[in-house]
Image 1 (cartoon, one colour):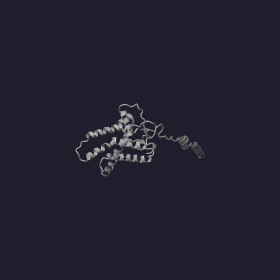
Image 2 (spheres, one colour):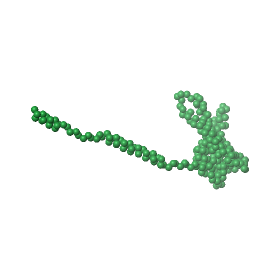
Image 3 (cartoon, one colour):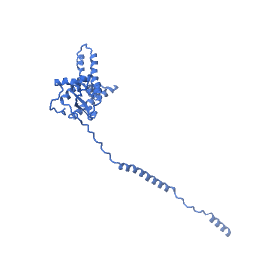
Image 4 (cartoon, one colour):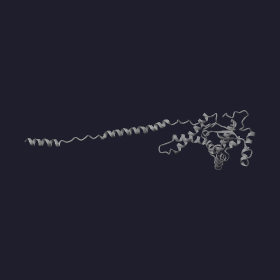
Length: 267
């Protein structure tokens, strides 16, 4: 029995397992890698911030002086007012007698007179401004519209200024459309008329604010347009010569002529 007990003890000693060394957990390396990624992202975020801070502040834009420069002299009050009257008659004033006659109930046919009036309007707002940069009112008062740089404005300036009364009529019509507007009606006409009304209001407000400089909506929109005295070169011929001579006629009558010592900046 003693021998058997010894053999069992030796087998138990041989069968005891040997402890293996513990392996390092990979979690720690993951945490470290996460920390590294966070530091990289943080540095990447700090770089654009530092770049933004390092940018130099933008310099404020220099304000462009759009006041009248050069050898131009602003037109006086008489020329300013008489030009407006002549251009008003040429643009829309001719239509008032036709409206009055048609409203009286007569059998008068205004077709030819209407076509003739439209031709005068196109001549004064498109043809003459494109060709000479002036209107009938400018020729009769010996004036001209120029921008702050000495150049004539586009013909659209003269056309838009001539549309004041049509815009005002469309604006008043928008009030009637707004009162009679119902669901399902097309809002296009109402929107157009409201825009016309806003244009008229803006022109009046800006004209009041900048009354001293005679700058209305369109003078401001075209970057400074002024009414100045025009000196003829004397080399004109044909229709241009006849238009220039109209200034002599009105001057002989004393219409649209500035008095001596009159302040040209007065509006």
